[in-house]
Image (cartoon, rainbow, N blue to C red; front, side, top):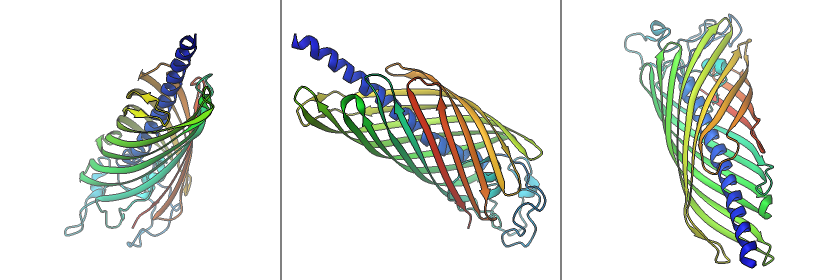
Length: 362
């Protein structure tokens, strides 16, 4: 009789753990991929020109008014050419491009006057995630911080590498416990301007995570703790088309993210053994965004459809994501950007994110 009762409980606990892991892997990968894509997509993207007299008056070091927008790789190559003997070009990687598109570019080097080919950036995002699914409910937050370096190898080609750290802190209601993790991610990336309006980007990374868990063993009326490590491989690829009309920048994107997390075998402090677990995610992303430039402000609105074409353990496979953002060009060197995104229509699941970015050119 005891075996009959214990076996279904063990299966239910395993299913709850799988669902929680699915949500962690999905949310973590989406966050990293979004930050990386926001950076590398921006580097080669066209943008609406700044209206005359609406931006900072002097350009950095040249004394000329900033009233004509900025050159774009492949779109205005003559404007990107430099006088003889000058420093190598740094094509299009400026504050104004970031403001026009509202992408999360973070802290970055790349002085427009010198047109350097190198960029250094940083950004952070907070996700509030949770599930109301019976027997697998949880809630908590995910924090992602990233920094990176990139170099313009050719006029349309940028390559770089990013380093990030993620913290997960969840209350697992289904077992009266918690799950906490921290992990380092290393992610090389590429961006290539196929045409003046069509940009491709790709990235691949490895994540090294460690988890701490706790739960209440109701049979023994005691808290049980465990610790395990995991290796996560992840990647993304996107193709984005931009259309410029007046002060508007309209974009449409199609892409995919892939992730696989292998969690190693571990033993809890009550001698309960847990076999290794593998979680694979493949997700399709289709979406669009509209950005409008008004003086130093660039509000944006976007919508994305996400579909999990590969996912372990089942569950709802799609959602709609709404995005609101605002870029503020505080000076010709400083930009502040905020973005809020919320997921809709994925059954039982909550995921709201807030991204803040500041970029300074020097």
